[in-house]
Structure formats: C-alpha cells, structure tokens
Amino acid sequence: MTDTQPAPKTRHRTAARAAVLALPLAIGLLGGAVTPAQAATAAAPAPLSCQGKTIDTKAPIHYRTETMIKAPLSKIWRLQTDVERWPSWQEPVLTTKRLDWGPLRKNSRFRWTTPAPPTATTPATTLSITSTVHQIQRGKCIRWSGPAVGEGLSIDNGIHVWNFTEVKGGVLVRTEENWSGAQVEADVPTATKFLGWGLEAWLKDLKATAESHC
Image (cartoon, rainbow, N blue to C red; front, side, top):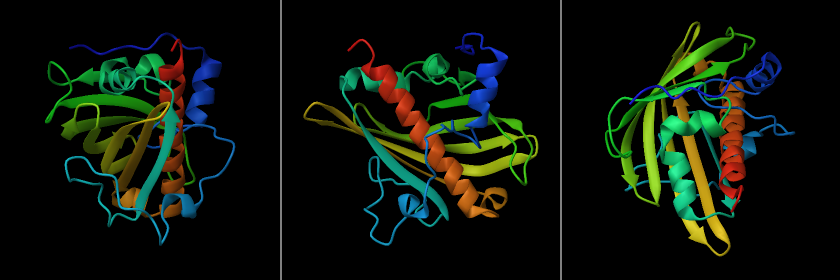
C-alpha cells in the first residue's frame, strides 16, 4: 500500500482546520467547550469494549461520546476501516499509510499524520501516529492503540475503542479514548478538552460523509 494524499487545500482552509486540531486527533470547532462532566463523571457508564477489552480506565485523560448516523452500517464500517481514504473525508488527516496488506484486521498497523496547533506549553507541529489494531469484530467494534510523536509534543500511548450498533433508523456510533504520557498528563484539563474536541469532530465528519447521498 502507498500513502493516500488528500486533495490540495488552500492556505486559508488548512489554517482554519489546524486551529481546531490538537494532539493526535482532528479537533473541530464545535461551538462549545468540553466540560469535565462530559469527559468523566462519578456515574459514568461502563467503558466501551471490543471483545472484552477497553481503554485504560485508570488513565487521567479520557473522553467518551456518541452520535446517531442515518446510513447503512456497511457504509459506515467501510469509511471507518478504509484508513487510507481518511484524508478524503477528514480534512485534518494529512496522510495515511497502511503498514500491512488486505482488510483491516487484528495486528494491522497504519501510520497517519495530523497538524497540531500551538498551546501554552507546546509548539505547533505535525504529529505522526502509529496505530495497531488489537481487537476488531466486523460491523461491531474496533480497538486500536499507539503513540503520537511530533517536534516538541508527544503522547506515549492512546487507546481508542469504537462501537457500532444498528438501531431503528440508522446506526449508533460510540467512541471512547484515553491518552497517557507525562507531557499531556501535566495539564489534564487541556488535554481532555482537546481529546474531546477531536472525537466530536471525527464523529461529525463520519456522520456527514456517511449520510451524504444515502
């Protein structure tokens, strides 16, 4: 497999999207701040899982969200698992490259890049994330993890779980992720906010793309 390159972007569009990115995931302008209550509460539900495995529930940085997508499960699953095409519908994903061949499966690895804007303690950079799939059940769930590394910024590990459930009128897509590492754990509220924005933006893009031309 080779790198999938996104369509050319104008300087204005790239700057705008970079401003709503941070750390290893695409971060969207959602019109509202992520609150600690959204990230974790005392009455939080059981963590999402795939084949019995969850995020690192002891990690101080974690976030969970969900959305209803009015599209066939097959289309949603194809968009999510065809990682080399992510740049075609997630503008913040600059490049993706499969490190193995064939359908996404257990032990599949892929490397992808995304810009991260500056924060109070870290410079603007481009993060390279190397993800490894640990669990996957077709049409049901995916769990992967991996580090994110950029100049002046790194996340030691992120564990990401996705669940897909067919319901009346569409598919309920739920996702949960944690980050770990000394650099991001030095400012848990900021890291949690950025993680939340990223997951919300990912779902927003997935929903918009899956529901188009349905």
